[in-house]
Amino acid sequence: MEYRGYDSAGIAVERDRDLTVRKSAVRVGELRALTEGLEGAVVGIAHTRWATHGAATEANAHPHVDESGRIAVVHNGILENAEHLRAQLVEQGVVLASETDSEVLAHLIAAEVRQGRRLEDAVRESLRGVEGTYGIVVLDAQRPDELVAARNGSPIVLGLGEGEMFIASDVSALVLHTRQVVYLEDGEVATVRAGDYHTSTVDSRRTDRAPTTVDQSATDFELGGFSDYMDKEIQEQPEAVGRALLGRLDARLGTARLDGLGLDPRELRGIRRVKILGCGSAYYAGQLGAAMIEELARVPADAEPAAEFRYRNPVVDPDCLYIAVSQSGETFDTLATVEELRRKGARVAGAVNVVGSAIARECGSGVFLHAGPEISVASTKAFTNMTVSFAMLGLLLGRVRDLSATQGKRIVEGLQALPDRIAEVVEQRAAIAAVADRFADAEHMFYIGRVRGWPVAREGAQKLKEISYIHAEAYQASELKHGPLALIDPSMPSVVVVPDDELIGKNLSTIEQIKARGGPVIVVTNADLPCDLADAVIRVPRVEPELDPILLTIPMQLFAYHLARKLGRDIDKPRNLAKSVTVE
Ligand code: F6R
Image 1 (cartoon, protein in one colour):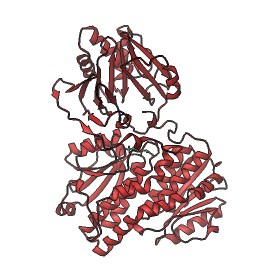
Image 2 (cartoon, protein in one colour):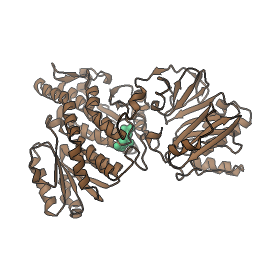
Image 3 (tube, rainbow, N blue to C red):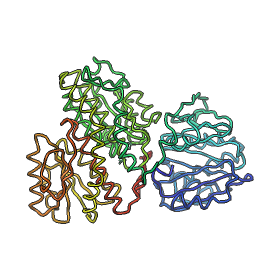
């Protein structure tokens, strides 16, 4: 799972009823060198860690092993009562080897095994005393014919091979070996042997999980000729958007078909509000989407970070369509929000990329994004497909209300043209790279937008900070003079988003205000503005005004990408970040 972002890695294999453990606080590449000589092993577990409890050191890397060196455990998630469990173990005389929450699992399971329990029962028994989230795999060196996995809040998927079996936290790790997979549900335990597997609940009830076939192949996850995944995924956007639109537009009636929502026209009309919930870039995509939905359908719509929403004990509106938006479908805060909403009887649909993921399953209905596997930590094609899906939802909701057939057809045509227009922006990458090069020594940047341009500015700032580590701050253009303008000087470049809409005059005066204070300006626009208007002008083609924000986001990706590249950053795996945030 190297691609997800990690800070240490480790592997444990069984040989002659003994565990051999190797760890690295650097990269998987280094771990590979450390595993020389272990090739004969037939069972093992490995892990890439993203530090939560304890620094990124070898001692804290997984697998964790009990004192007798018999039981090895890898764990994703966070154990909330770890401090209490660690103290109990210390009281019992156990010497803990790491600062992690995860290590306690190895000791607890080993204690149960010593009492004669089968590994599966020992895992079950131990998990009863554990609070928090986990996706674990356990290896007992004395019983090397089986592995036990369990899930609660962190994904676990079994890969069924012929005479061989796999367990992973994401199907992308499995597709090279098999496309037959079994997704564990929360509260489930699986015992896996080379030739078979069975599943049951933590409280010992048998469950029946039929395998599903993954609709992706190993090549979808490969770099091809690209130097990194972010570049590949930016360039894949025309095709990805084409897939999102496929079979979903009705040119004759000027509307969209989103059958996965499971809502008939009467139910669609009954929706009085739309609320989109997600984290990070998915939240910004939601914000961009909410604006389009409101504009196209005249239904009040907004977006909110999922965790903020669930912690403020929100008033749940029965006439609101809640939408959980997520690339991975595994983001903990978004999933927990869906669970909370469902518990309160709300109508929740998913806008999810990964089929079979926890959020997709929990929602039960929604819109799949069809962006294809997104490997780079920084989201690009999934973000774009989120916004395209929201545009289709806005169109659909609009057409059961007051959006005329003519207007609907105009939006359908705009959506159909998007893949080609995106390709035109991607083709400008050399010119955008040249602009990025000129600003590579900036320490801070502002991203300024107004109304349609505001979510674009937020996502632009997000992309820049996460992959280039340049401090970037997004502001509404109207807010500049209420404070942030004090920071403008020649060392503070501003990226200003200028859609060609009725607010263009206001945006031009914002640019003047920044220039008057000596601030360098980079304009991203689809209007015919003169090249000498600012220090740099990046132009994108026009689509339809309502859809402009989708296209205006693409140069933001390219700008951040080339700046990060110029600075020599590890683009696909930015420091401190993980692709799938399955912890709180
Ligand atoms: C930014 C980025 C993150 C994710 C966020 C939600 O480029 O990738 O901010 O957008 O962690 O992830 P998903 O969409 O998987 O729920």
